[in-house]
Length: 490
Image 1 (cartoon, rainbow, N blue to C red):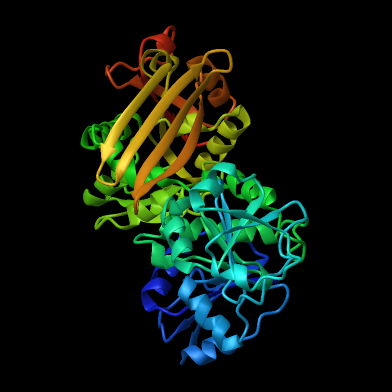
Image 2: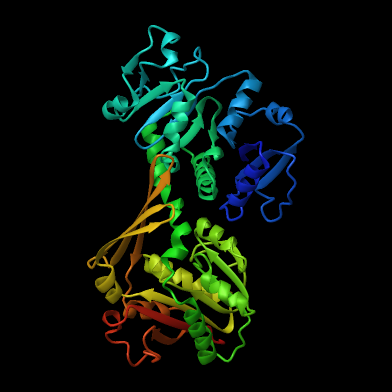
């Protein structure tokens, strides 16, 4: 069994780390051990994958030994420093950013030449105290100051320094894009002293570590390659969904109460079954589900994004939340109604994925239950999202939304770039969302091949049921279409 160990010396940090595990995609071959100081919390559904191990003192917490195969995380940089002093082994810390890499050396006599790959070049600033202690035969490129280094450095250059304040200042700028590790111990650092709300940061780092150690090609004993580190993390960046924190503000124009009214009205119109149990898939921050809970229904809700679920979980009124994709098996059954709103279906870019979603929904519905979903149409892409760029200001910075439509591939693309104020500069994060623009006729064909009975197609502008007599031209007339499917008795 592969093990990821986390060391936390503060109760507030332990609480943050545990919150990141609430919607975590555990795998069966990895177990997490959270070592902390006198923190009592009962673990239920997570207990199979997460072990909470209390220690009565910091000394005992630091006395544990790590095996070669362990992957270790420290909650803070200061925790690692205290740990190193206890072990009498002051190991270096590597800070990697897409544009710069820094190796902080706490012990001037301990500059490991074998730590990084052969293509990496050590660099130093002329005023650094390390210059007086490094070996004379060590190949070091000198720079007058940090600005000159930043302008002239190569991609694989590593700035070596003993100046902790300089490192903290640089890392405080664009902190979301820094990766911090202690390579000699196969350890990483969450550096929670840099964060106020660290949910996404913790979730991303731990899920990336889990993915990395379960990769058969991963070898922790090999020298580090900065290009590989950057490429690996860049490929996983889609998991870092900063947009969740802006989603409710971005969707403030939506009349959720009207949507709920229509959904309940359609249920009464197209089935005689009572409405008690509801599931919303791809729920986002659960604004529809919240209103259904308020009306007294039993509501479960799922989403692929742990960040969206985290935001939903902070609300005072919420459904039962869990993490799942649209094509995952649905753990519950006998639902009277399953919902998939706000063109989430468009994120299923393959017809096979759409069919899989239908199968899961059908299996989870009670007889006479309804599955209601909506799509964004070709008209919506051509009229509203063919080529736009919007800049919005929020309390923490700026959000740039760009959208473009590819009519050949029937692809709707949206990019989100966040500029968030970090210390004395702005931290930049980027997300790309890709959707398939389905034609109404394509969806009808796929639905008719399923076990569902297609009962109706509605638009948000009309009460008319377009199916089956008025489906011609819907793709080019309405921005949004609602499909109502029924599970009928066999």
